[in-house]
Length: 257
Image (cartoon, rainbow, N blue to C red):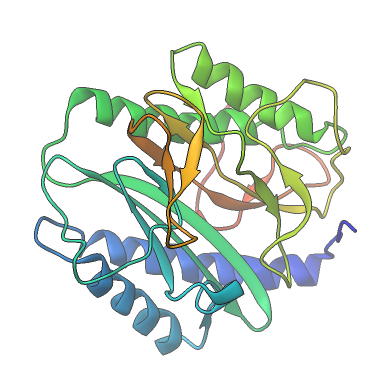
C-alpha cells in the first residue's frame, strides 16, 4: 500500500534527509587511496549515532554494516571490510540510510579514487544526470513509468546499460515501501504519482551490460560482464504542484527550464 505523507511527516523526513546529506558530505572527506571501506563504515555509524539517529542498513535483513561500499563492477550492497582497500583509478559507490525520529532517509553517490579514466568520470556524470532527468518527471499526475522512461532514454541513448533487476522504492517509516521505482519503463504506464508520495530514486548505470550477478556472500551484486557501475540516489517528495523536493539534497533549487 502506498503511504501519502502530510506536511508534518514530510518535515520529519526533511530533517532526516538533511542529516543524511551531512553524513554523506563528511564521508566524502575520508575517501582516498589506502583507506578501507570498513573504516568508512565505522565513521558513518559514529556520525549517524552522534546526531541521534540510527543506521537503517545495519542488521536490515541481516546486512552487517551501516553503509554499502561498492567498488568498480560492484553495483550495490558491497559489504565493507578491512581487506577492501581503496586504490587510485577505482570508483566507489556509497549507499547509506538512517532513521531519525522514526523517519527514513536514503541516498547514494559514486566518486572516483584519485585520478580516474575519462570513461569512468563520464559514467559518474551520466548516472547523476539520469537521476535528475528521471526526477523531473516525478510530478503529481504523472506515472512511475515516466520516471523510468526518462532515466532509460537518457542512459541508453548515450550507450550505457541500465540495471533492471534492482529498483528505487517508496520510503517513509519503512526503508522500502510501495511503489517500486524502476530505472526503465514506458511513459504513461504504472502507478499515478500523487502529492505526498515520498520516493527513493536511484539509477544504477553501467559501462556495459545491464545484467547482474550476486556473489556467494548473498549481498554483493556485480555486473555480469565486469564493467564498471555507478549509483546515484536521493529521497524525494512529490509536491502539490511543480517539481519535487529532493529531501536528501538540502538547498537544491531546480534550474528554470
